[in-house]
Amino acid sequence: MLSVVAPSAGLAARLAGFDPNVLDAGRRLAALDRFFSARSGREKPGRFWRVDLEAQVPAAASVDPSAGSVSIEGAAGRAVVCDLASAAREHAGLLSRVFGATAAGTTKFGALATAFAGTGAFVYLPPDCACDDPIVVRYAIPGGASVFPYTLVLAERGARATIVERLEAGAESFACGVTEIVTEESAGVTCASLQTAAPDATVLQTRAARPGRDARVSWAVAELGAGLAVTDVSVEIERPGAQAALTALFFPNGTQHVDVASTMRHDVGESASETIVKSAAVDRGQARYLGNIRIAHHAQGSDASLRDDALLLSSRAHIDSVPALEIAANDVKAYHGATVGALDADQIFYMESRGIGRTQAERMIALGFFEPAVERFPTEALREELRRALQSKLP
Image (tube, rainbow, N blue to C red; front, side, top):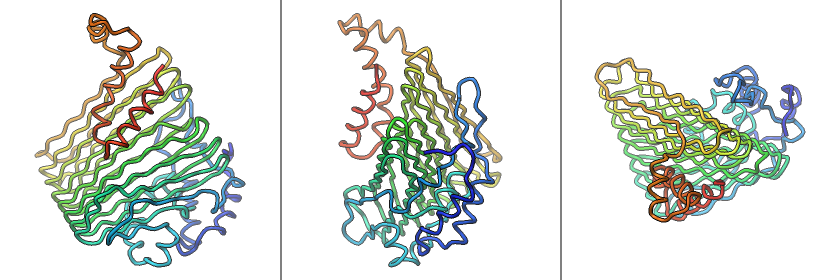
């Protein structure tokens, strides 16, 4: 549930109910102040984008530290996997190395999630620990509640793991979450996120990673639910040899709004990043993608690419695509490209000439359009689930 006017006093009073072991009262209040003073960085509502992100504030009455739940599956071997409260009590030293170690908490909605951090998960991977099966973190948010899921991943040297985050939220719920990943040298972490909230829910997510030297971090994000879904993904590349990858897909239908922003920040040379975004919109679905590649003046030898493709399946649907390069170095490889268009008439004609009906042909082309992104998600079971979810959105 949302309040039109920011209820700063009411929300501040709610902070007292949250675990001081996770974050003390002073830091929580400072984070809440940042939320109210910071801007979202998005444009104001206009002809197509009708949602004011600055007005997205949870109602104080809906904030309850016991409202949401987290369950964790797949923990095994030497890895430490537990809820956030247990991590604060039993692994405080490890937790402090990753909590707030990225820039996630400096953003508007990242600050809000930090202020009310409580429902969350902590994953610690000791040196050379390799988890064969994905670790699944599942958040469940009841209808009408405001919950702030917080996932933290710390991978030591040479560790490997795949994390799958699932967020399910009920009607008129408000979810504002953060995921932080910090790795040491030569570690590898893949984090896949699937959001399937109710059509009238609001979901605001901030995801940030800081890979170590010669490490690799891969994000795979699917925003398929919620009436308003906002996602910020960033990777801070500060060590040579680091590699980052982002795959994002979203498909607004009905009157759904999706807003995705990504930033690959190369602050050191001899590093690489790749971003692939696939989106479609049908009915009156609206979406916006802002993609940034930033290469510092001393980051010579960086290699970065961004590809964003959008498909419009209705005359009333709208998608904005805004890729951007900010390059201060002169010895780099950097590329970005974006397309926004309708279904290819020649492809439809070809399939009709082979005896395939027009409706079926359009559905096949639309699903095939997403396949390069779907293939980058871990596990075949998750990929099949994504294909079914995308198919259900088609007219």
